[in-house]
Structures are given as C-alpha cells and as structure tokens.
Image: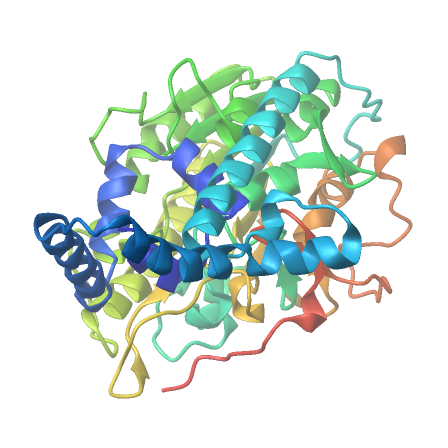
Length: 449
Ligand SMILES: [Zn+2]
C-alpha cells in the first residue's frame, strides 16, 4: 500500500510524518487525488498476490520447512552479521531486509517527530529572549503573504511565457531573483523561516510573532491552512501566538475547502480595526497546493501542456490577483503599507507523458524545489529593482528585522539583505530528513517544453 508513495517521495522519512501529523481530511483527499493511477496498479497486484497466497496455504513437513526458512534467515541476517563482524555491535539500522527496514524507518521517523513536537511545546512555553528596537521607518502596516508551492519560473514576473502575474509583473519594489526557500515542504520551510535557529536547533520561543509583539506591533495571523483544534503542530501553533488569530479551516475533521479569496474580509477587518496601531498582518495561503485543479475549481483561462499544469498556472494567477486586492485594500484605507510575498517552497517534475512533464510534486532533491518568488512592494515604492544575489529562507528573520528597520541583537546580520550585496554566505536548505544540505549540491532540473 505504501508503494505509490515510495515512488513519489521515497522511503518513510521525517517529512512524511510531519505532513501526516499536520494534515486534514481535505488535504488527504487532494493528496490521494494526485497519485497517478499507474502507481496504484502495482499495489493492487501485490495485494491480490497476498490474498491468493493466503488462500493457497500449504503445510509442509518440518524438514522441508527448515530447508525453506534457512535461506530466508540467511538473507535477513547477512547484513547484521556483516556489520557485527566489523563494528562489534548491531543496531536496528543494520537489518537491511526490506520489510524490517520499512517498519524500522516508520518507527524511527515517528519517534523523532513526536520528540521534536514535545520539545517544541516545552520551548514555546518559555519566554522569548528577543530585545528589538522599535521599527525605525514610518510604515504603519507590514503585510507578509506566505504563498504555497509556487515555482518562480512559473510566474510571468520571473520570465514565464504566459502572462499570469499582472500585479507582480508591474508592481514597484524589490524583486529577489535568487531567493532559496528554507525547505521543500510547508511545515519545515515556514517554521525554518519564522523561527530562530540556533546551533542547528529551532528556538521556538523566539519566533516572528513574539518578535513583532516586542517591536510594538499588533500581530494578525490569517490562515487558509489547517489547524488541528487542540492538538496543534508546527506552523499553526506559531500562528496562534498572534494577537488576533483566524483559521478558515478549523479542526482536523473540517472537510470544507476555502478559496484564498475568503481571507479578504478578515484582512479588511484587520486593516480597519485599531486605526492607530502599527500592525503586522500575516496571511498563509493555500495558493498552488496540490491538487492544483481543486485550488482553481477546475477552471483555467489558458491551457498549458496538461490539465494539471494549466490549473497550476491559473492558481498562480489567482494568487497574483489576491496580492493586487490586498494592496488595493490597504491603499484605499490610507495605510502606509509595505508587503512581502514569498512562496514556502517550489516543486519538482513528477509525472511524464510522451517525454513531457504533466504534473509537479513536493521534493528535496532538485534546486527547483527551493527556487521561489520573493518580493517586497509598498505604497510608496517608486521603482522596480532586482536583487540578484542569493538570499536564503533560513535568514528570513534577519531580512524581516531589516525590512521593519529594527535592530535585534540575536539577528545581527552584518550584510544588507535588502540591497544587491554579496553576503558571501553558503546557501543551505533543510531536506526531508531534517538535515541541512548545500543548495549547490542539488540537481538542477529546469523545466523544458
Ligand atoms: Zn507548501
């Protein structure tokens, strides 16, 4: 039954467990919908073979069964004995027999995720150690829009052939041409960007929400992504620390799906209430999350290669329209606003038909899984500038502090991340095993027609 997932995402790893823990019925349906039938057929064949084998059970005399079991044991024990002969110890990892390895990988990943969730809860109960100065510029409304699964090369603003980004293609501001997301999946990437990392570990008590609060900002978290009721994990738990919290989807079993446009009234309300307060408003979109056609109600303006890719291109257009409306709403309420938009991660090619890529999926092996749009626009932005130097999602909090004109000792980045300055940093990303790897070591698999 795991076979289709193994083809798409590999053997059980930490990321798969984090996703399972953070999902809801709706997302699960999208996930299943996205598995090509071709991948499911071998699973069905295997299940049928297993059923037939159980039906045709034979009882063999003892001698014969020993003769059959001995080679089996030899196969299972070969690697552990080999490991033992060189290291004098046996661990569960040394058993490479597939069935056992599979069960062990499941168990080990589960154990790590549960332990890290527990640690996160303990850390979040501690006070933050941020000590920022107050924002030094005169914006009164900081808006961060966290997009979902957008590859930069599928945005017209970054050179895509179809004009699917009328707002981002013409807006003034800073356009980062080489921003690399922190990770290849939502939970790891968003917490990797919004939480301070120290000595390789996330310090959950120092996150963007309590940083902004200490900056004297009134913080809003408005999300179209899941929240699991009382038993929260990861990103939603960070979001819940905001002064005002809105989750369109409530609870694990809420199967209703919302459009990102449903966030607009909540944004409007955040803009108008407490008129004298300086605010940080964070919106977390469903954006271009698979299944792409569910995101756009199976409707698209222009066909591109396959139905799924056409929906993908359209979902990016819808997000671009949403950004335009957010800017419009802030302006018409006379706010001195500035807005960051970025995507949590990119995607890689998945399913091919006749040599053409017809669908995308999450991944951590190619550069394209991490190449995301990132730009900053504002009510008073007068020109459009490009920043070509590499910037990392792992430095998002430093970038945030610079954007708000605030000094924070724990984020004392010497480099001006908002100018096209070479910061001489090795760019790294978090892989699905929760390990940092060099971005340069990843395969470059650009999309080709
Ligand atoms: Zn995502």
